Length: 111
Length: 116
Image (cartoon, rainbow over all chains, first blue to last red; front, side, top):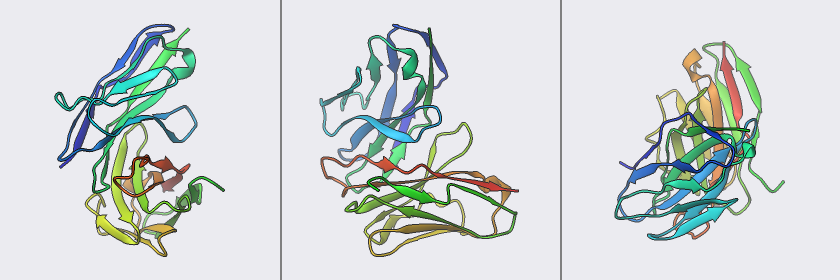
């Protein structure tokens, strides 16, 4: 079946540091890929998405590129802020509608 | 409202009782998903609906769990004879049809279930 494996946390960075959270997947066909974020005390919300190979999703300074050859969708940000502290989830959705999430990575950014 | 709503927001019950959780998806969203999020854990997929049909029930933990959706809209998740290990936040999400270019899921605020 489909699966998503993401970098284990927690991750602690200083403000303005570079962030990478790795995500790899296994799936049949051509799934859509997503990063969702859950800020403290808030619900899950979409951060960015990519629907086909080589697409780059971007939002709020975060980027991720759909790499079919390496089955990866790594999340990056060049300069993190304290307000980026949250739990980040990598997810895929198959063409049949089945959704699979990773276990989540907790990011803490210190001033 | 424009978002996914869930009720109740909190539910405390005694072991062995049945509970029913409700989800109102965004109008026009044909797909609806139920997840469970235990403390400090990721999202555990339970079931999803396309319209009123559930193509994939593989995530339901046991036969005590069931879900239905009527009219392609509201869904209820029922847990019978609750156990303490059922304590978690139950999340509902909805999306446009699979394969649609804008098929991201919109999540509700969740129902926090505590089984004493």
